[in-house]
Length: 586
Image (cartoon, rainbow, N blue to C red; front, top):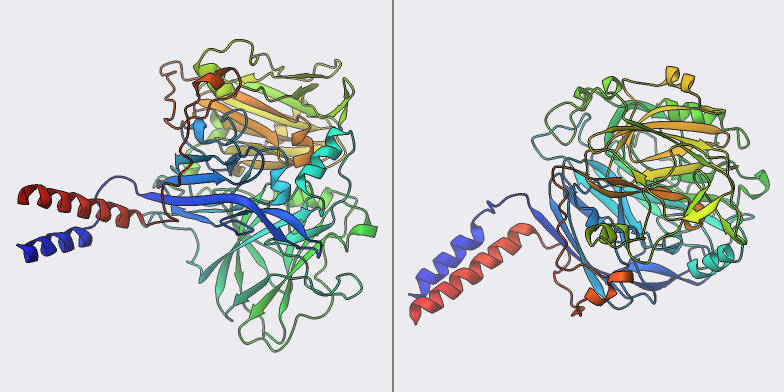
């Protein structure tokens, strides 16, 4: 009898998983860890002790389950930058959607990366936490049946670039609360590490830097994310071309760049061929844009590209940045050059270019104007259309589901009102399956990046001056790239088109952490009139007016780190067979 049981168990463990879309499970503990990226010891936010955090590496249509334990000393939320959870706004991880996870609690995110491919990242969305870390990569791979529009690379390399403050996130918050702008950061990090000592007079000794090991003649896919606080960065690799192939889930028209500006919250993929003679290592550089020349050396991050047959350390001057620190013309023209690859397949077999966005009638138009931070009722605030958003104690999605009165208003103006600014919880009422045109008018003095959760949008226009109705004549209505984060230059505008087919309440925000914290965001309410039901997750956290509904949590981890789905299913099969056999013996 025992041999028969063993045969059954072996057969079960060898059987392939035949269920629906696979699952990937992760267990994360978010906590403070000690680091000194710029030589100053400080507390940063790590995940499972890692800074940056561990990657989410999944495939199109996979289900992702991430159990998060908050070991910080204050509430926490994680958001999935650019990942379009279909009809699952509960998993969005922003304060308008979720109650924050209290200190010491755990909460499990569960969402599907449906119909997406490409390079994204996650980060903590709770106030200024990203300034202390807590970020990591999200890579969504093509299914085998969907080809990629370039040769399969020999390796995959993720780089996080971003400005960094030696002051902790709590101190940065106190400064903003006290009416003081953050000022210049203290440096630029690459993968959480400080600059290589390319110049002894600029970089002190003992700074730990990133080294990227490569093989000569091979081609690597570099996925580069700007996870910083507020600084646009120029990315380049000494003596190497960057072949741009993807940005935030869209394959781009393939073009070579010697350098590319990457603004806060943006993600790009490049193919880089190791075609140099490796007489030395090579510099990998991320340097600040549009800052005073006197501090540019301080705001330059440097890593090292190391060939396996390298003959010596990196040498010579850093590769030159664009020669226009005080002029955005080069950068805006570079941004216009990034186009959609309309012949490539995306996450689905049908070509992406089959969606002719330029032929669809626009339903709603919103002109969103920003201004420099200003005092409102004695507090420093930032605004869109003279409204500075304030998060209610009861998240918008919960308030909508439980009909809690007075939490928000559906009266956000569709154009600047030229009135005194105010603090309010006013949101946009979108039209389900409508086509919304949004124009960001930047009347502030710095580059701003805007991000929309739950969607990718088409970037159709970008220019200097004030947007007018005549500006539509300059729109790109054929191959404007689809992405989720777009820059808006000071004294200029950027226009996007978005198809509102994803029901929920979705966050539209500036990615610059300082102005986001000061209120430069709004939410878009998208209701499906044929199905306005909303299923509350079993593990929902209640707060604000609904605090009394909160159930006690066990605070236990659920899954081990990234266990392959087939192993989980086979384990369950083994347990089922064992239980069945035990019952049969009885």
